[in-house]
Structure formats: C-alpha cells, structure tokens
Image 1 (cartoon, one colour):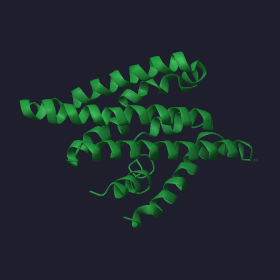
Image 2 (image 1 turned 120 degrees about the vertical axis):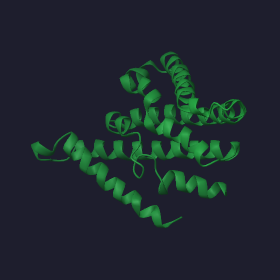
Image 3 (image 1 turned 90 degrees about the vertical axis):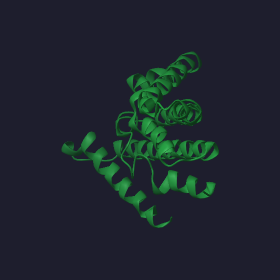
Image 4 (image 1 turned 180 degrees about the horizontal axis):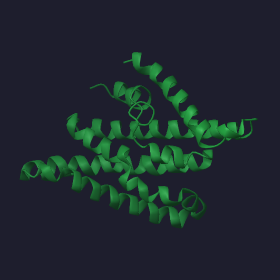
Length: 190
C-alpha cells in the first residue's frame, strides 16, 4: 500500500478519535489546555509507534509461528503497559509539571482503546513492518491533532460568554461533535 495513502487516511479520513471514536476518555479529560494536549499526544505517539514495532515482531516472530495467536490481546496489553511505564518514568524525571498535569490519564494509556485497537488493526490489515509503523505513527499524529484542536477550541470557548447551563462538558461535547463532523468531510478524499 502507498505510504502517502496510509498517512492521509490515518490522520484525516479515519481519525482514531473523530471518525472511529476510540480514545475518547483522554480526548475529553486532557483537552482543557493545549500544552497538556500536546504532552498527551506526544506520549501516545511514542507508545503507539513503539508498540507497533514490538507488536508486529511478537505477532509474526513468536505468536504465529508457535500457533498461539489467541494470546494476542493479552500479550499486546502487556507490551503497551510496559511502554507506558517507561513513558511515565521518563516524564516524571524530565517534566514533572507535565507528569502532574496528565495525572491519571497517563497510566490510562495502557487501557486506551485507541492504542490497543491500532495494535490489533495492524495484524488484521496484514501490514508489513514498515506499513505498521507508518500507520501507527500517523494514527497517533491524528490523535494528537484532534486533541490539540479540541483543546484550543475549549480554551477559546472558556473566554466566551456562554449560558451557565452550557458551560463545561455540554459545550465540550457539542464542540467535539462539530469537530467530528468537520473531519468526516475528509471521507471523500480516499
């Protein structure tokens, strides 16, 4: 498959949050500030990209040859959990403020359905190693794009005169729905 098609499709057409609706928990929980959204996006990008490489190697180098493909989900969760622990340790040392801002959502990357879903999709789509890494990195960039756009919109909406009943989550959900509809406009591209 053409790498350009994979990249455009993963970022815009089949955006993991806005088109496939995976990873909604961090999308709504960490999108109050753009800086926090960027940090979460970088963490997810790292975990998703590295996990694609490791998962592909485990699936085609270990699970398939041994005939234990039924262990795929458990093994993938363990790989993702180990990578998230590594990211947590690194962030705690490098950027304690970002570590504290991400709070509970950082360890929740382990159970983020977007990360696990992409790992499983790589196997289902039978991508080769290069396509797997490009697909997962592009999907993570799409995740980050959606997170940052949404955080920017939420920051701007906090400054507007909004009816009291619409403040907070109601306005955030309406904004997320509109953003999702805007991204669905890309579906005619590929």
